[in-house]
Length: 118
Image 1 (cartoon, rainbow, N blue to C red):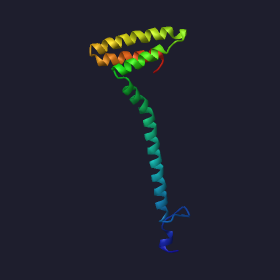
Image 2: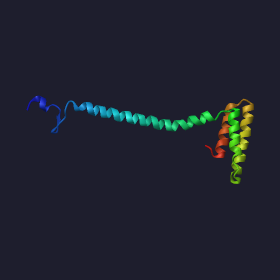
Image 3: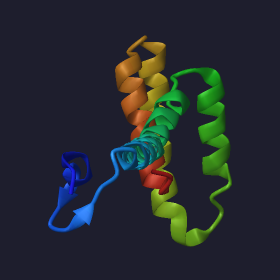
Image 4: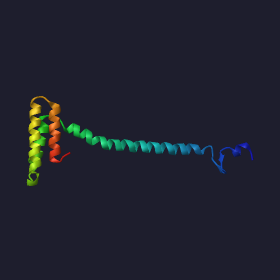
């Protein structure tokens, strides 16, 4: 047996020096798939948070949207939730008028929570 034929043998199995390219390619594909999956999962968790921040603007359009959502609550069982949301919206409007945007945003989020939207 020549020294060349013994190279690449381990426990009686022969490993071709050219086989490592395929294994490396498969490992690279696996790593790329796992990275892509991690990105997709991270994006799935990040998008709702970003969407909430984009929706929670203290402006007239957001106030009107919230008001129309509250007006759509016609079920008598939701009366208590609607009253709480109305109180929070009143405080949000007062905060917006006083130019306290952080407080306004907080009250609007509380209104959404009391309506069951968050």
